[in-house]
Image 1 (cartoon, rainbow, N blue to C red):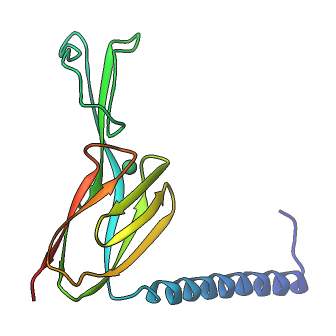
Image 2: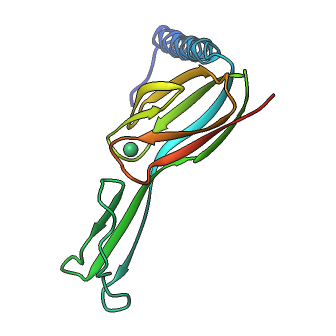
Length: 165
Ligand SMILES: [Cu+2]
């Protein structure tokens, strides 16, 4: 890089300062919207556990897995490796108090889309990969409620426990 005049240096510094100011403002903005979530925030993720083996060491299982997209098993590839994966909520068990207002803040990590429901509490919500979905509710009745992804049946199901007052 060539030589820089004082004037050029000043302009450069101003540009850098305004960039960090813009960044700081963007972060303040993000904090404001996060603080906008109602009640206690419970952080969750839509994830996929994955494992695999070499056919010659662990033969590909013959017994079929239950129907539904929640379990995925791929037969051995040309190199002899087979894989299995299972979609799930992390954490899969969420505990709240009766009458408490909470926000589930769910990030989609694996799987493109998770159309979901918590029957009796939340009619429907959708979690997408790379995005945050916030679900706010007040559980007025004690009991257990399934957290169901209707796409990855049968196993992408968690449980919301509402403790009695
Ligand atoms: Cu799902």
